[in-house]
Image (cartoon, rainbow, N blue to C red; front, side, top):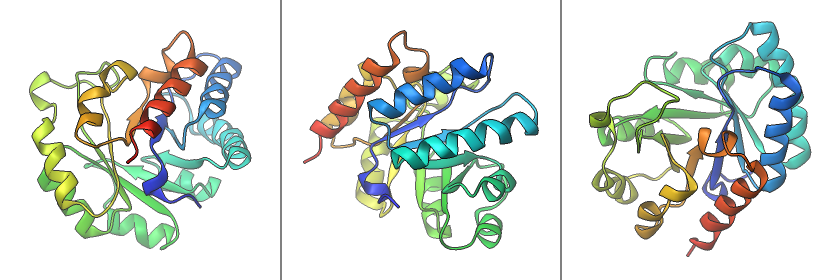
Amino acid sequence: MKDLFDCLLYAITPPRIEDENSFLQKISDSMAAGIDILQLRLKEGTDHQKLAVGQKLKILCKQKKILFIINDRVDLCQILDADGVHLGQEDIPLWEARKLLGPEKIIGISTHSVTQALAAEKEGADYLGFGPCFFTKTKKISLSSCVKIEEIEQLQKKLNIPFFLIGGVTLEKLAPFLSIGVNQVAISAGIYQSSQITETTKTIHQTLHLAVK
């Protein structure tokens, strides 16, 4: 299994499937261009559909040696034998998920403040999502809820686990983070709403890796 500290580009699937073939092609294009982690995050559709698509994505991830994470659903993570699960602040508690999944599975937590981030690390999270960094249409948030660059700098100094900046992150918005030495990001629309997914993903991948000291 990949070391999470070596994973720089974390891709999150579009929230809905309008056409399965098109959906899978977009994911496949991003995989070929250099994503390190893929999270299956479907907010619409039946469990049957999520399971069927999840089975196909798991095969693709295994072929490309990409970590496969399931959003929210511990049960789907178990059924698919995915690499791990990503939980929000209002999902099943981390310790309950750990009891169900065991010590080998990855558990990531969404955090929106330094206090939440430090608490999640203490509770045993393997990595964090930290944000939102910018206003995003993917989730309904207010501009006032966006995290500040000062908070990101605090996490750099205090955290001992990886954290991925999330929420409205795009290729064009990487510079402030790279300038302070942060180069792990989670992106959804910034990849999958691109008209050139392969080129966009490849450029993000290269930009993040060039920033490694």
